[in-house]
Image (cartoon, rainbow, N blue to C red):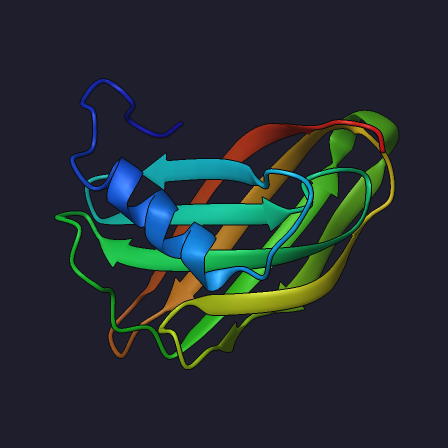
Length: 135
């Protein structure tokens, strides 16, 4: 479980920067912040509803600096409905964020999110649960 006892000084600036990187949209994306001592991941899911969504990942070290990542993967599952983890590889964009397009989130519910980030020396895994509303 992420440590949410200390507010992040990077939270709002990060969210604003990622919003600026997204195309104009009618819905506000879901914003998920996952933080541990070793890493901090900001995740935006757009439009943030059941269906097909785009995902933007900002991957940082625990102190908020850019994390030099060689590869990033997203895993989504809906355990309550028996939906096993779906793995998708992210692509590094020119904006410095990791992007995934057309990610299927077939139904509303409490989804489980896992992100694996591979650096030159280790694999960092952070995970959390989030709620997806119906369209």
